[in-house]
Image (cartoon, rainbow, N blue to C red; front, side, top):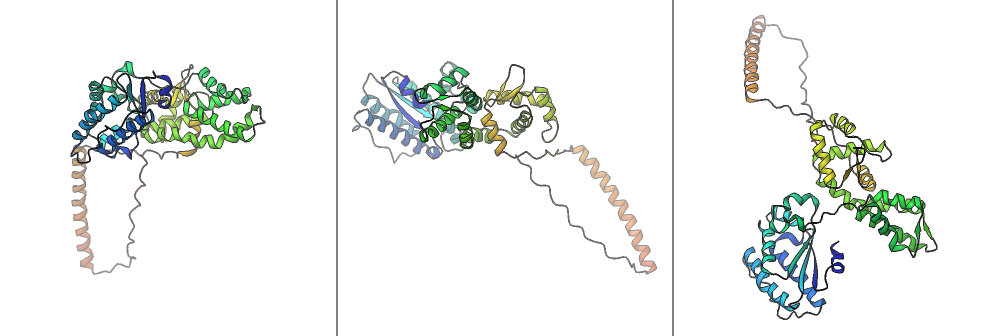
Length: 390
């Protein structure tokens, strides 16, 4: 989406794409140097003068000094160089990773607030950022991201939009059989990444045999393994970021939907499935979990009131690449009062056993009779139960 922005905004905008990666977010110094380098590279592309760009302050002692250099020394020169009638648009990809860096102490806690200050300082500076939906609630607390009127939530494509994107770009090269087109749209579920992945794989296969005029089901069967592997790009993060309870819900839906030929599963059936091991979730817990996964566009509520996966290809990847969760062992906790009562009972038992044992020993010593019983076996302690998965 960010890569398409330069084709959609006014030509007065100088668009600077800035991918944020963990290696870039190791420190404030590395991040701001990366931002400056991306801006300078774009200035050179459009022919703007860069000779007045100040050198990066290698001797800056703290994050505040680096931020001041970027906000005043650097941006003042950059905005002047691109001409006074043009705007600088910073397109920050994966901005949510900055939250992880702040949590790890790699970036200053007020980094998002500083971005807001940049916008307030420079009228000809704008920021377009892409964030993971899981960070949406947190981002609403930060001034530059809290304006709901300036947010666009990317939902799955409507069926007619998905069909147009599948057929229009290749209409002069080949067509799809009705069954193949229906299957592609079904597998992707409107997910732009999965749809693009499927269409790209079809196109590459067609390039090898351009005499084919129509894409049929045989094409889809041939590209399916590669499409399933690429689906991990979106499915694996869903699983990795899901809570243990959400994982139980996902696996329950996978099991139940497998027997419905892709149709939705009723909430009642999900609650019944999740009430049994390994989940053992109460009905009151299930519905909020379903709504959370629906909000993240992983599952969807159907017209009949049931749930199914948005993209069957994503569900297929989860089914093939995740292990069934182990049964949850209940941990029974005892209150201090209960512990005190048990300790008292145990003490009485030990005292009685001690008295009886002393009597037996005295009696045995008086008789002087040696026991012919074999020695008592020493039992190894039972192995500790294996660790439960998260």
